[in-house]
Length: 231
Image (cartoon, rainbow, N blue to C red; front, side):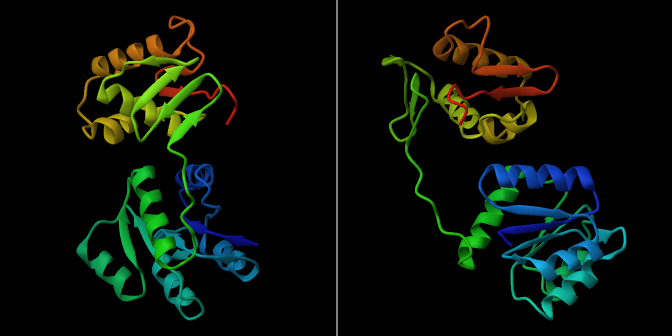
């Protein structure tokens, strides 16, 4: 089979979460958790890009990179909690194309992967509609307008940005930290500010703001935008 991305990382939870996130955004991804498993996978499958950790339970990411480079000329991006200049220099000198430190932002990592895939011609840019609609709610990204059942709703710029981010990441848990990083671009934004914006959005798009079915709270975790049409 052909995959856009292979993640090789012995931190199972991180690898699986990253894999799930990439697949959600149509970057076909598989995770392997060790050197031997990755080599076996590459014998049977074709991949366009590899995300590679340095510390693997049964070997070294450096050694795996050198081995892969004898057979494949595809982008290899190292992902590691090791942050010394020596590690970065070694990674790049043996054939790595980039070095990304953990913990990483899933959104930023996905953007880097997409750019690399397009640069190497492995992914075509898919045209995206400027308008999201589920039959009741309509959000026009280009004109920054929101309608519910044909009635236009007035939102502030930040409220619109928050709603758009929730919709673009619909049907998955979005933590408060992710919202601070990607909407406010400021991880020190207060919970109170976020709560006010969520309340305002619910008043605009929910049939019953006190019993929301679109923008739902995941207790102690964050929020999830549940698409009415299941998309």
